[in-house]
Amino acid sequence: MTTIESSQSSNRKYIVTGAAILAVAIGAYGLGRIYPPLGPVEGTIAPAQRHVNPQIGSGDVTLGDTTIPQLMQTDAFEVMSKNPSFRALAADPNFASLASNSQAMSMIAANPKEFSQLAANPQAFLATLNAAKAVSANSGSVNAASAQAFAVMAQHAVAFESLARHPQAVHAIASNPNAFTAYANNFAGFKAALANPSAVASMANNAKAFEALGNDAKAMQSLSADAKAVSAILANANSFKAISANAASLNVAAKAASAYHANLGQANGQVAAVMAQNANALYSLSLQPRALLAVSQHPNAFLALSGHPRALHAIASNPNAFANYANNFGGFKAALANPSAVASMQNNAKAFEALGNDAKAMHALQADTKALSAIAANAASFQSLAANPKAFAVAMDAKALTAVANNAKAFNAVSANANSLAAAAQAAQAYNAAAAAANLAASGQLNARAAQMMSANPVAFASMSANPQAFTAIANNANALRSLAANANSLSALRGSVHFQALMANPSFGAAMQNASFATSLSNQ
Image (tube, rainbow, N blue to C red; front, side):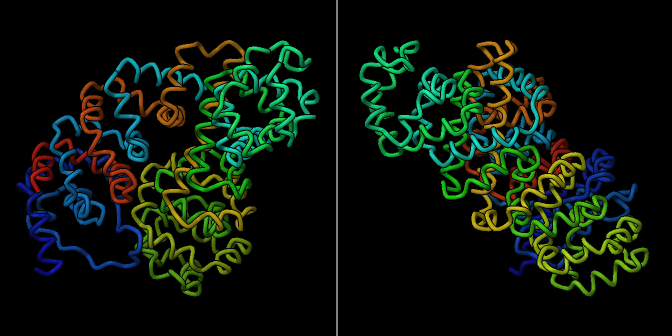
């Protein structure tokens, strides 16, 4: 069977009647007017158009909307419709409630395990969300000093994972760094002092805490293997004093550093610091790992495009229309000279004209002609980002892109694996949430229950703090919670799939799933 014949047979299963699709299309009409459907996935520059079953035609969708037929043509839909784990999701009658929330689903798809566990206990889900709301309302980008603390924690991840079990000792060291300078790179002296902390002036007020550290064999082993961990605390005393004042915050920060280290290693502290200081933007990008990878590999080009946000959004929304300019800067420059005459540019002609007249931006694009190719090669990921203009604007923040561009060599060195890079950015977001929680705790605004929820569910907590409104909708929807809890295995099996992440972030898919016939046809594929 040829590819086209296979596509015909596959798609026909979803098209129950023209009237059914019309109902879905009308339901998605508003979304379809705002959010473009997904396109092909990475590695595809200009794919052949898939066949659309004749049952879907202009006569069926009288409003002129083609959102649903185009959704079914995408590589993301084609691949997922044949995936057993995805079909199991679609077979759950409650999944439609979950899929309707594309913003939350894009975050759940990145880290489903913890969300599924939380959803099994709606009260715990709500408690974690309430804690995340408090942090979100009082958080922002961490300062350079705090970002550097995250970097050194990632470089000494094993040692800090052990030290996090002894927050009072860490706080005492950070609160009085001069008194502990003798132990910098001197594990033997530190170990001897811990044997009798009551006799050591700098430890006497917290003797039990230091004694517990000295009796923790695993912690002492990790400090013996990495004697510079204590020096790292001393060199970043203020930041560690702040975050260690709250045990839960230090615990989450250490877990975040460990996750970063597991994905990118300890060699490059620059990347960790940049990610922490620009966590909101890079976290938004990380929800589409291939897009984050493209940005990290072509930072100067994306920085240039970010100065013309409407043009960048237009390119990301419809990458295939710009595929002809991949590695063809001359053609792109010529099109920008008269954008009103170019179909893919005419709706944003002034924005593209401004881009063409920006000499600095054009120089950056000419110096990296593969940037447009990277967008086209990862069309599904960029379209998923562009589907939510507000989130897209956060992801393409000029400050964050400038930081990545200023550390281009460091980012290129760790840009071998999209999912690892994304996991590292998500770890930085978790660290920021922990730092914000520590600040709240210091002012008496973080209660014990909130701290407990953060410590027990650090990944979910960090995601919720990034977009609490999206998760509020799930917390208030019993069917969505049931689906999230019941499909833990299927969601975990789909984790890391760029097709799944792209489809879940597309509002058109959520709208389509509201039609029972569509959902049934999908699950019966």
